[in-house]
Amino acid sequence: MSDVKSPSFMQALVCFGGILAIIIVGAVAFQVSMHVLLMSSIMWTCSYSYFLGFRFSDLRNSMSGGISKGLSAIYIFVLIGVVIAAFMESGTIASLVYYSLDIIHPAVFLPAGFVLCSIMSVAVGTSFGTAGTAGVILIGVGATLGFPLPIVAGMVIAGATFGDKISPISDTTNLAAVAAGTDLYKHINSMMYTTVPTFIICLILFAFIGLEYATQAPDTAQIEAFRSAIDENFVVSAWTVLPILVMFGLSINKVPAEPAMLSSVIVAGVLAIVLQDRTLIDILGSLQDGFKTSTGHEGLDLLVNRGGIQSMMWTLSLALFALALGGILDVTGYLTVLLKKTLSNVKTVFSGMLTAMCTGLICCLSMGETYISIIVTSQLMKKKFEEMKFKPYLLSRSIEESTTLPSSLVPWSMPGAFYFGVLGVPVIEYAPWAILNYLNMFVSLGMAYFGYGIFKNRKD
Image (cartoon, rainbow, N blue to C red; front, side, top):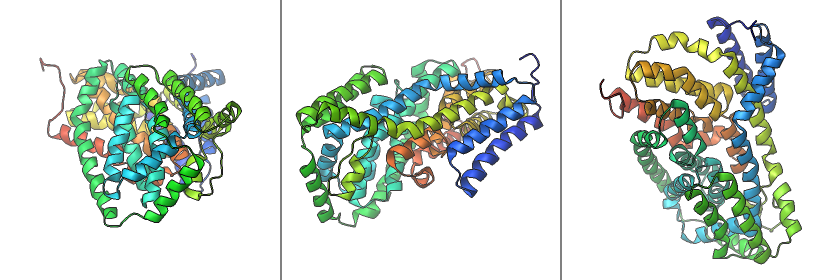
């Protein structure tokens, strides 16, 4: 790479602008597949970088490096499909929906669901796992109660990403702390200053939104028909909750997500054989291709016919393209050049945090990948925060608030693609209702403007 030329500001701007033009024009104006748009963006970036002196082998290695940084998320993608199929086989999802329809009233559905997803995501440390389990249940319950699915999906994602942001066993939480060079629990503590107030505001807003539906009595006939369909096609039992309890228990005891999820799959498989009269061959087939049945009830069919390894292949392939593009942008240094002049004008706490958050957002929009966005933003801003005598956990907090949360609102991002695949609601439809994911940044910046929640070295 000795012949590589460092890109100028204009060269970096042209490359980055080309990527945004390809994605935005292709997606919005022509509804082109996101896979094709990301592949086109990779081709554009590679061609452009070639003329700066990068050899093809350099660019290929950068793509491979980008993919390797996101392998942990790819493993989770595959396992989520397996977990969903296993939970369908065991009757776990069906039983939880059955019981929920007995106790959930429209007036409290949204705030209760928000709290449930928040607790679950803190316990398991993954928003993907929460959306793939509790989220699927709440989508089914919400549809039966008459809630628009985008509102329910937004509530699920807001709660799921809340826990993913502050859980000590979350990969993004740990990555942000490591990238910024701070202690994990200092990082979590710093986020509490802004995340807890945002959580309370969201809880109140969801309660008010739910009141609109509280005046309308739920369709009892529809609910009874749904419950009858579940009762006819599944053995409803409290034992079916065991797989989720196993996953929770292992996660709380800091067992990594992968073995915790696989353990719950094994328990679910045993329950499927014992309770649901399923054979081992049936279960293995579902783990590959998803649970498939015809219950005679359209809503129940929509709820339970899902999961399996193959159901995650669309998301997985999109993730690979996003990771490859992120790897190229990281190695070629276009973002570094673009921010160089901006960083020289950062003088205050507010401008520093605003620049860090804008950097995180730009990374999410261009790369569509949370992990690389966290790493790149940290690399770009770490030295500036040190010069300004800020504690490193102020940087790690700013990074999480501008990457982990808003990445779920980017249609071509890995989280956006995942949530669409699991919940069946397009990103552009649920985004306005995922209130916490964008409100947290404004709360944090507002506090910074008035000097609250700022961490500097004591001697300064």
